[in-house]
Every structure is written in structure tokens, then in C-alpha cells.
Length: 372
Image (cartoon, rainbow, N blue to C red; front, side):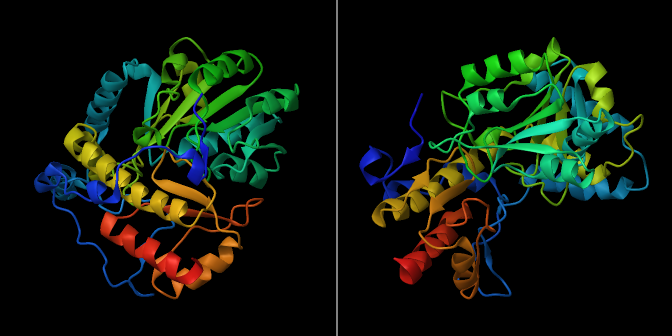
């Protein structure tokens, strides 16, 4: 298993910043917004929301413009086309795949299913809050298990915390705000073992960004296992955060827990755009390359300043600023740069989302100036 918690002496190799800043050949095929080179409070660099700041692909934008003309019609046929594209890509039967307004509806409904069963939720801490937050709003008890000293989700500790009244286990892989992954064989064993006792939801919102041999999607497990749900979203690499498309993979019997009888809440624009975007591999590769260039800039800053950080498998970094993250956010905001909110108990750690490489360099330079 690779070591993910990284300091200067632990990092070996990697591309130089000069090499990482080379313009991608793929960029010529895309129309992307210009970088923000003079950020202000009114027009900030958004390095705090884990968005794709390039937006949807050119192919997706074109069909989305056209789809607005049919906004008065239901899109049942387009949904069917999109579901087939995704199920074919993933090698999963169409009956095991569902489309939603992002992954949020599936995550929230899994928490509702747990509430109906009058059970508890088991989740790592810290992690993404959709399932956890919804459960708490519904009066469901949440058993939180701190991540390990290596900043990874501690599966052994989660096993030890398991009780018969826990009906839902939530795992975000890669995790958020900590961009670590769960080793694939350990996760598979955990899912197969614990799904005999509870429903398991694996949130794979950032899986497209992962370039790590220790990672593997758990999607294939849903074909024969009724107690596993995999959630995905187009909000990240596809730039659909404000458009809203997501997917769930689950056994048809389990799918009834997290879907309604009719899916009439999906916008034509969103469905049409997703049909194009998921087939636009060139754009996805372009975004991954730009993400790597921006991450190289951040990691160089961490190394230069000897800052402890977690090796990222996503489009955001997590580092120990040695001061409250709220202080960092306040000072950076004065200069038109938005950073992540505090994530207890790691209140001295800062989450920084990747932006365009030109913007990322501005972020790194300003951090050095203020705190270096």
C-alpha cells in the first residue's frame, strides 16, 4: 500500500513545475473561460468548493443550448439513452443504474431508509456530510469513527464500532475533505463482510481523478449484492455542479429504497448535456491534465514551506497550515481567494480546490506571501 501522508523528505520524483505548465494539445479542441489573473472580493478565485472551474465541455454546451428548446417536454427517452450509455460504459445492467439530480438525492434517501428502519449510521470522521447531515436532521444516531493516524479511513476501527442496530454504513472513496483512498482489496473485503449486516453506501464522487493502483470502484459488487449502493456525480470532472446529474448503481430491489416511481425532476438541459459529456473522453482527459498541473503547483508550495499534507487523489488538497483554517480563509479572502471551510477536528488543516494552473500559481504565491 502506498504511503499517502507526505512531507518533503518523503516525496521522490514528480514532474517539475515548468513541465507541468506546458499547454495541453487537447486544449485547442476546447473553449474554456479565461483565468482570473487579478482576483477581487467581487470576482474571486474559487479555490474552496471542489468545482471544475472550466465548466462543461464544448460538446455538452452545444447540446445543452439546443435542449433548452424542449424544456416544456418530459425527457423520458433521453433519460433512457443516458442510462444505457452509463450502464454500457460501466458494464452494469441498466436495471442496476439510476439517474438523479446529482448524487445528493440518492445519498439523502439512503439516510431516510435508515431512519425508516430505526437504525443508526456508521461513518468515518471527517467525511462528506450529505448522508451524515441528513441522518442527524431525521433524528438518526450517527456513530463517527475518526480516521487513522495516516489520515485514511480506518476500516478496522469501523468494524470494531459495528453493532446490530447500525443499518447504514457510509464510505466516501476518495474521502472528502481528506483526499485519501481506501485500498481496493481491503475495501472489497469490508463491503462483502459488512453488507451481510447493513446497507453500505460508497460515494465515488471523485473517482475520475484517481490515478492510483490501490484504488478500484466497487460498482461491480452491486450486480449480485442487494446491500451495496454506489453513488457517482457529474458535478466534478464534468463541470455539472450547477446543472445537476448523478447516478446510483444498486441491485433493482435496493434501488427502490433510493428512487421514486417516476423521475420527472431531471432537466432536459442536464440530461442532454450528460449524454455528450460522458462520451467526451478528450475533455475529461484535458481536465485531468489541468488538475495535475494545478496540483503540482500546490505540492511544490507544500514542499517549499515544509507543510504536512495528504497526497491527493482528487481535485483538492488538504494541508496543515499550523494555524486555524478560518484565519487562512479570512486573510486569503481579503485578496480575492476563497478557500475551504473548517473541517473539525482538523481545524488547522486547509482544503484547497484546484483551479486553472494560472490561478493556482496566484493562490500559491499569495499564500507564501501571507504565511510563508
